[in-house]
Length: 111
Image (cartoon, rainbow, N blue to C red; front, side):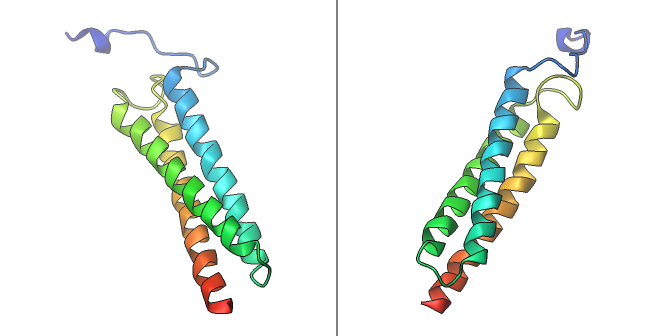
C-alpha cells in the first residue's frame, strides 16, 4: 500500500502550506472583486480604468494561485493540501477578472 494513503488526516484548524497559498490566492481574488465593484460604481470618474486593471490583475493572480494549489494537491478535501481553498480561489479570481473586464469595457465606451 502506498505511503501517502496511510498518513494521518490533518486537523481542520492547522494551517498547512497548501492552505496558506489557497488563502493568499483567495485574498487576491477578494481584493479584485472589491476593486472591480468600485470601478463599476464609478464609471464616469477617472479612477475607473485603474480600478479595472487592479481587478483584472488581482483576479488573474487569484486564478493562477488557485490553479497551482489545485494542480499540486495530492489528495482530496481534508488532507491539508488546500484543494477546497484552491477551487474557491479559482471561482473568486474568475469573478474578479470578469468584473475588471466589464469595468474596463464600460470605461472605454464612456470615454
